[in-house]
Structures are given as C-alpha cells and as structure tokens.
Image (cartoon, rainbow, N blue to C red; front, side, top):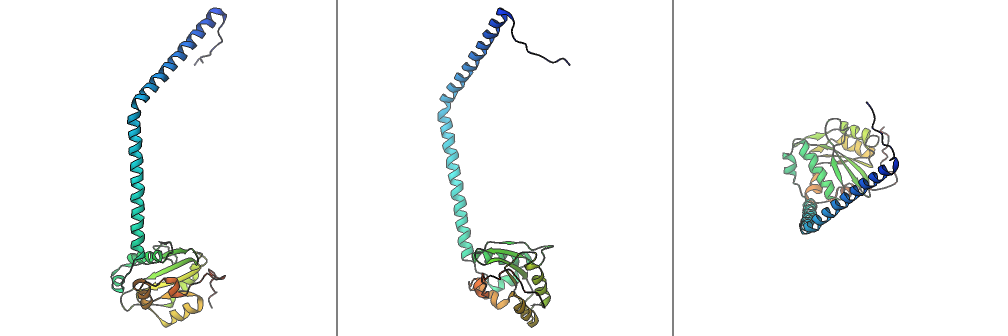
Length: 224
C-alpha cells in the first residue's frame, strides 16, 4: 500500500496557497476557542453550583464517616460481655468477641481463625507490648482445655506469627497439666474466671496477665 508523503511547496504559487490554508486553519481554531470560552462564560453559574454541591456532598460524607467512627469507638470502649453470652456463641462469634475486646483494650486486632490458622485465631498488635497471638477455645460449660493446645500454640506463636505473647482463651477451664505447662513455657491462659474479669468487669487483658514489653518479648523458651 502506497504511503502518503508530504512535500515542501514549490514555487511562489504553492507557498502562497500553503500560507493561506495555514491562516484559515488558525482563524478557525481561534474562533472555536472564542466560542468555547463564550459558552463557558455563560455556563459558569451552573458550574459553580455543581462545584458547591459536590463540595457539600464531600463534607457531608466526611462528617458521616467521622460520626460513625466515633459511635463505633464509643461502643467498643463500653464493651462488656457476660459469661452467659459467651456460652451461647459459636466458635466464630467467640473469636470475633475476643477481637473486639482486644480493640477495647487499645490493641488493634483482627480475626484470622479458620482452616490452616496454625494455632492463631486472633492477632493483635499492641503499640507498646508487641504482637499478641490468641488461640480461642470455645467449649461447652464444664469443658476443659488440655496440654496439647498449649504445645500447638508454643510451636507456632514465635516462629510463624512473630508473637511477643501467646494466650489461650476459653470460656471453660484448663487441666492442671495445661496450666503448669503454660506457666513453665510462657504460654498465657485465660479461663472462665479470668474471662469474666476481662470481658465483663472491664479489666485490660495485658494488665490481667501482667504482660510486659521486656527485652525478651517474642522469644519463647524451648520446650523441655
């Protein structure tokens, strides 16, 4: 297919013709710009009104978002959960409740429980104390959590989740062996009594368990 090639004007007649065409094009462009400016000048009240409306909508949305966050913050700050409520929950709701309680304590947290969670159902990142990994064990009333749960949490809290503190929380109780093993190897535990003090009475979890930001935070002792 032949390509269209432009050549420079030759002779006086072609030069004059090219100049005339260029001037005509320039005049046309100027007229279009003047016409557009005229239309814009006529439409400025409408454009101004649209701008004001858009700004008002933006301010309203910002205020709505701020108010919603304030309400949510107030709700979380006043959060209290009774033991009977925990007993009526399923596993998922129990994990969400523990997450909300951590947030209440000033520890941004997220629920991560599910298949392949590697012994972590809730992870919180405390601004001063470091990462707190929670394994939630919802049981029927009178249920007990055994040592095997402590072993699993011990094995993944540091290496997998980079935790400074590991906590197993249940609405039931722990066996004596589980408590002894946890105390010996730095895996904290919250049984039914401690859960009531935390969730219902309003004590902060880190104060309840005596968590600290010492130099060895996040380093778990090797299991014997």
